[in-house]
Image (cartoon, rainbow, N blue to C red):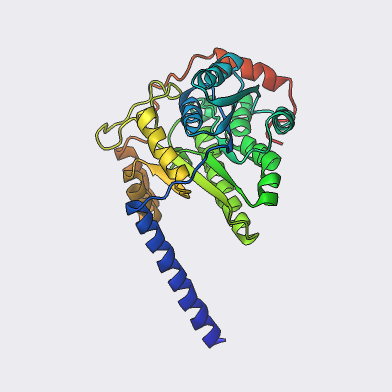
Length: 321
């Protein structure tokens, strides 16, 4: 028994060292995969990061499936890709609805083919204090930011497993790693998205499906309009992120089959402190870095789109089941 334990420990340590070596090697000699002719589905493709990623994948020769609740914005993204001789399809979908996701998924399979790269990017934020949140707001935040990941992956993972080929990208948030004041629903939904990603990664590994890659992306606040009004206490230390530069890093990570990307890197140091500091000290540190005040002047995007989603949400029994 003791001998077996020693052997397993040696193998474990050797494997960890080899894996670390490969990661370090990839930093200096990055090998990026070819995504030409891959079918890439991006939720929330009508604006922000989703739109930028759609354009970037199209420029690399991918067939891009744009999915968004905003039909006009979504078709605009697809049309821009087509105008630049790229391949794109637009599907209107309410990502807060399980039935709508499954319906659109069947349409995509029938008219485009099996999705090989799935980017769960769609997200919403209320930016309200906990006691100001309505039950509908809380349910909808989880429906879009968390449950949509379950439904899209359930729809497209089977074909990836059959072929042992694919890539699932989860756009979470640094708010899925550290709690932020005025974001209890958003943080909770993103923490859940992080947990979903990690569990799915382990499950695919246990099934021996090493041809299916998973990437988790956790950025700080990005200047896309979604978090308009939010401010960083120390703009040099934790700057509001530029969308184009952020997408550059995201695409680089995805094309290298990276597992986790946290932007900016200083957040990794703060997470390390979180792991061993006393809870009271962590609260003090969070207040120092502005986690308690960054959302005080939050405005967000215009409410027209959110109201439209709320109306549809009220008519549905499918969110957060």
